[in-house]
Length: 305
Image (cartoon, rainbow, N blue to C red; front, side, top):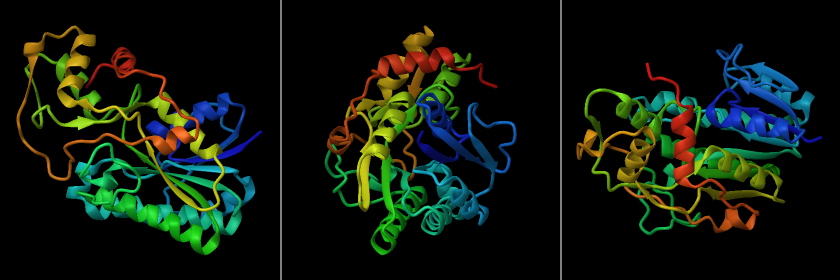
């Protein structure tokens, strides 16, 4: 029975990881925020509510001795980081360092899988973008994710801590109540015309939550002796206009009900498509088509408030 610790276990990705780990027969220790009382996933072997960074993590890691630690806690809103860069920094960079230090002190054989982001690339010069591309973030969020990767590299070089930074592209699926699909579902269910930022020609590389979880387990299981960086995506570029059209079709909404404002948002890249060669080398292949993923997301969405 593998011992797996998950920070941010009450969040979108952390909760899905915990569910899959429990289903695989793993012993799972979930770390949620200090406001997560009563929100923990079912089936956990251990749980704790902490606002990271917290020195208590050193003791918890030492007692549980995880073989794998998925670090999912932290900020996930690039646009918000532009307005509150200090908040974004403190919820990201010191938290990664605290997790690495807990592993160094208490479970140095553990493999850390740290959730990073495609935001480190900014607007890539060429597509598909590979992990060898020079980071060029456009937002504090992207810079802070890059700093977290550098901390992982530091602890690998200096202390021999094994880690993988998973550069996640556009994750989506049931349970995520923010970002484009959630916004589109809410607006298209409304009575007024739905207006979206941008031109609609922007693109993203979307990955459904179940595929994302499987990808993270592939990364966790691979052998590593240092720090690796791996894109987590499907390698398929989707126009934002097609995203909205797909949501509308599954909702049965007429195409005249939405438009794009043309307004460009600072810190938000125009086009993304990942080179997933490294991820495929770990044995991963996406299983859920974008159309099916949207259908599952739309049909499971609660009524917007």
